[in-house]
Structure formats: C-alpha cells, structure tokens
Image 1 (tube, rainbow, N blue to C red):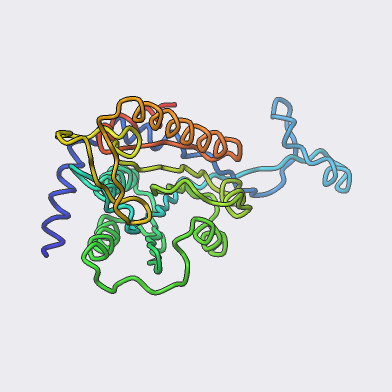
Image 2 (image 1 turned 90 degrees about the vertical axis):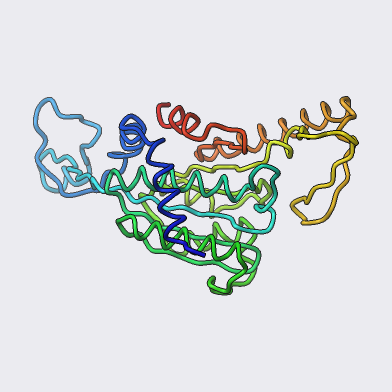
Length: 292
C-alpha cells in the first residue's frame, strides 16, 4: 500500500476544507489559555488586585503581585480508538470518520505551527507519539492507524488498554499538562474515573464521540426485507426489524437520552463534548464548535 500517496490525497482534500477562518477560530479558542507563573513584581496602581500575593507582600513588607508568562506554542494531543467496533459502518466506517476528523484538526494545528502528539489504542495494544511539529509527524501517526487496519503488528502490546479507564490512567501517568486534548472514540462506558477529572483539570479536554448514524436511529439504505444484520460493539451479529417504526422511534429516543446524559456528565467535570456521525458535515460542526 502506498501510504504516502494516500496521505497526500487526504492532505489535499482536507486543505480544501480548511479556511483561514477555521484556523483562526481553532487558534483563538484555545491559545493564551495557559498562564505560567514567572516572578513577583511590585504592584502598580491600576493593575488587577486579584494577583496580589498577600503572604509574600507581608513577608517582604511591600505590595507584590504575581507576574505570568504565556506559552505561545500550543500542544495538541490526539487519543484515538482503533478497536474493532470502529470498523463498523455502511457507506464509510467510524474509523474513516476518525481519520477525517484527525486530518482536519491536525492540519489546522500545523497551520498554527503547534506541537502534535497522539496515543492510538485498541483492545490489546497502544502506540504513543510524543509531541512534535510538522506534517511528517502527522504522516507517521496516519501510517500507524492504517497499518493497524491491515492487522500489522506495529503497535506495542499493552494489557487491557482498551478500557477508557485504563487509557485515562495512562495519560495521567505521562503527566499531560496545558494541552489541548482530543479524545476520539465510539465508547460511552467507563466508571466514574478520577484520572479523567485530573486530565480535565490540567488540560483542555474535548471528548469526540464518533458514531454511525444507523447506531443512533436504525435508519439505513435499502431497507427492503425489514431485517438488517450488523456488527455491534461486541463484534457479534445482531438482527433488527428496521421496518418496525414504533420500535425504531423508541430506540432512537433511548439512544438520544443516553448520549445527552453522557454529555451532561462530561460537562459537569469540565470536559467539552461533541458527537459526530458519518452524515455530519465535519468542517461545519467543528467550525461552530470553535466559534462558541
């Protein structure tokens, strides 16, 4: 497989979607957020009094305020789920959607000369990429995802990283801080995890749920027989009477409620949430997301 040739095609396709407005919204939405303490300085009239350190001022017998420096370089980190359930889809798989999202966000980061890192994981293994600049680094990440699709052993074995809790724990151990963290997965099940809260406290965390529209609505093309078989997250065949409108409506309501409740929980711990399916206009969705 010519990875570089395919990469260039995706690169060209994505460049057509990225406008100066998207790059600016991406940059302004997250840049300048993280302030690092630099030194103490003597307070001057008109400065914000909330930065006065009263304990240090009392010890030094003069009014001192904290001075902060801003790191202009943004660190962007992608956590991407490539487990079996991500291979589900009719027109395109959830993994295809994941790659489209990754390219859009990663190339927007490259336009801003940001550092990019990644953690790719499946049921049994993972591959970690430290943060670096440049498009070649994006290519190496892309190549790893595609090779994993072809079941090549390029990802280092690691036991039970497939659970979201284990992934949160791994990210906490590598001490991510002041990072724009995108979490791309189709999963919504994990225990109330303290590591996720730590990650959200120390980083700007955006949880991106990727679905196939059929998973949420049971609507699919060519519903002639009324019975469809599809592979679930358990990777087993399930049979559904897709022409039973009452059951489909009931299912869609339950599914919508589940996603809404999951989103509410994430927002409660300061994690931003966005859901994408195969019918979503990804560019428009993220443009609006960054604008807000």
